[in-house]
Image 1 (cartoon, rainbow, N blue to C red):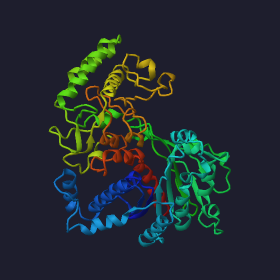
Image 2 (image 1 turned 45 degrees about the vertical axis):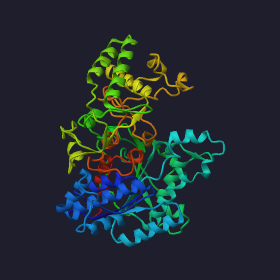
Image 3 (image 1 turned 120 degrees about the vertical axis):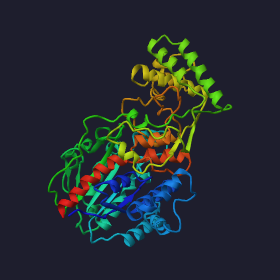
Length: 516
């Protein structure tokens, strides 16, 4: 008999990437009870998505309310007939700052109200990772008074641990950045401490019970850590999942730990299945309607933009001795059009919809798709950056790789006004996401500038939109990110790819099914 309504608690949920994957897995056998997130805009996204899932479960005949809201026909996704479901979504999605006394108390109340502890349940989530990440650590090194042992972000996983210790989930899934493997406090690898803590939460929290121990499993290698094992006997890199090997069009490498309570039998060890052919950037964003960038610091108009880009192409062509590059620049000029739109929060497109090129992900993206493209809006760039974007995209088309550093950006006028440019420290400052390769890791840094996420089409001359980043992160097309564009980029960049989460959830389901 199939399991259904398997309870899930999602901590540090972001916009809900892990939760989306679990909700979609095993014929929708998982039911999210609580999603806790401290960012108000990610919370708004979570609540809207929780409401969408409740419509699917309880009122499919009212799904048009959600889609009409997405399409811009309604100001609200609910009406008097679904107000109870909107309230229920507000009970599931919680605006809570974990690690604070009030936040922890509110989470406990929500769990105690909604969780049936007599039944097996699953805890998922990724404690905030800025302090663990290699970028975050290099940034912190520049702070004279920075002491990692005083950085509260290092210990937010302790709040995750507290929930494990107090409520004893049958299984937990914890996601974090690779930097957690090499991060140290007082000279000790923090990952070793995390393994020991998670395998024996009672000892970690100084509770004498020791009744809820866990085996910590890798999802990609037949590796297990349990209480009493030496962390030095484990290769930490065995816990890294390379998302591009599992159908995600992105070289996203993350540490994901699968914890299974010791009384849950593991009758068959299951790992994630690698796909035969990687999914590339073009496979998942080529069907989206083209949008043009916007001119900043000068008057923007379709005509002015087209004239700017064409002028840059003419200049670059006349100053390049590379025949392949000259050809791509020449083709780009013919592709530049003053009729290309700049997109929007809800973008209408006359030739909507095209087919998603990736057969693996096509149905995943397009189920219950609205009539508009959500969050598909370009951003403004200085004309000097438009020249660099045009050049970089044409170079990538010509040579099937992104240009790197001063050596590849040697045409006069391309070098940025950055004192470290010639040193090579910023060789990847302008990075094209090449059409026929998985993208680089989508990160929340996209919110600051788009230099590292340049679209492969020179004639669009821009960085990726939120929707394109969401496609690369495998969010369905009807996933509506709330907040302004900067806040949307933050949400997408910090998320776990839902399609990867779905595959992890299938393994969790099978473990629970076998144990029953």
